[in-house]
Image (cartoon, rainbow, N blue to C red; front, side, top):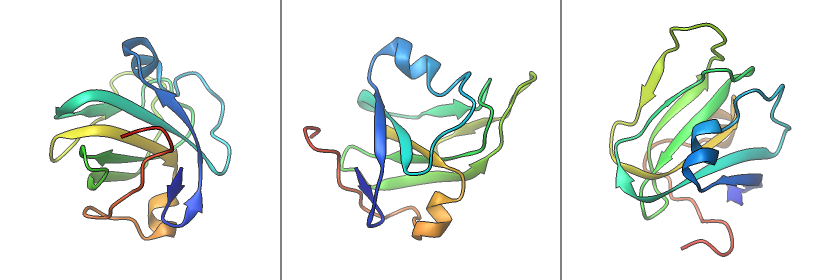
Length: 120
């Protein structure tokens, strides 16, 4: 997937189980990698960093792949309670990237992304 002119290898989280698990329990997210959460329809989304061992940028995208909200450098959370990060607007897709990616690539709400090949 190309984001801000840079290529990322994204793992798809398209089932309820894979979306719930996300990046929990992993020790790191390699440079140039991310996770793309696919939902069947737009709705308010709330993410948290429970059992994620590294900071992430969380990009909330509408059905047209436009960034509707983002959280820059959400910190890891290994002990409850964990902070929650709700989207400001309804989102159909959520893209997690290594912390600092959105700032480095100049991403902000309103930016249009191109979906990975094979996705609508």
